Length: 211
Image (cartoon, rainbow, N blue to C red; front, side):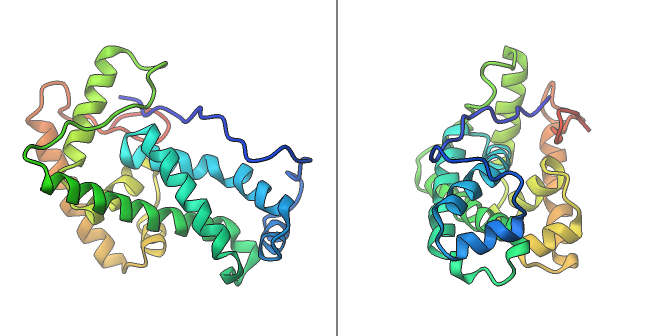
């Protein structure tokens, strides 16, 4: 059950290429409010934000909204970047905060509804067959049953292939807390998948494999 890769065209402004410039120099330019650095930050890191958001949410449209919010916040807070060479981590930290907020809002909307909505899945329509889309839809419907915190830990570990230590750093959690949430979320998802025809033993992974 492969997870689709983002093919969203990313544009911010027509600028000269600065791909040869280091992250540290881009970070320093961003802190200074230089237009080329603002554009380059988007071009360089928006694909990462979009792909992570798509995998966590199961929705391209929502991922685009998340990316817009991430970079709006990022540009407003650019001067808080203390280590320009850590620009990638700085961007990712904003993505995690916005994703966490979106997952909590989605959970609240679900609680306020009279029925549980079907999982929103609008990624990979051009590349997935009907069976694969159905499997992904059902998988994300099960993810919707996790708490926002457990879901984010689960997604970062199983869909982004991050280590427990990397997840802890990204979410500002202790290793033991990450392991506890991961064990809880994985156990719940595994039980739900085992009860589903066609889903038993199948977890989407980064790069298109299954576990």
